[in-house]
Image 1 (cartoon, one colour):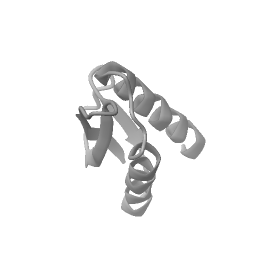
Image 2 (cartoon, helix red, strand yellow; image 1 turned 90 degrees about the vertical axis):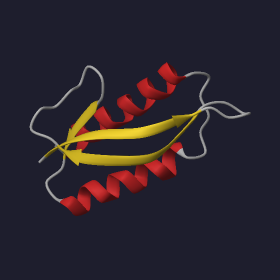
Image 3 (cartoon, one colour; image 1 turned 180 degrees about the horizontal axis):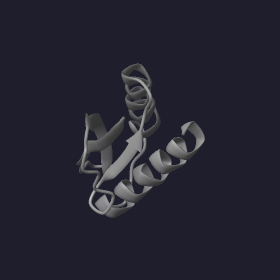
Length: 83
């Protein structure tokens, strides 16, 4: 199943943070304005969401673009390993 990933990018005193990762099944993936990935099961998708929260929760970024591109690269790499 193909999912569209969304998350919140929030400003903070120490930099921009990412949180509240969610995946929505989609029939119309949008890789230009978002991040899509494939998961064989809902459990695997849930595991990725927890992994993203754990990995990116403590990180801070200098701006929204940096945060977006870093998360996108991580998910693209994860998708390549798990496809």
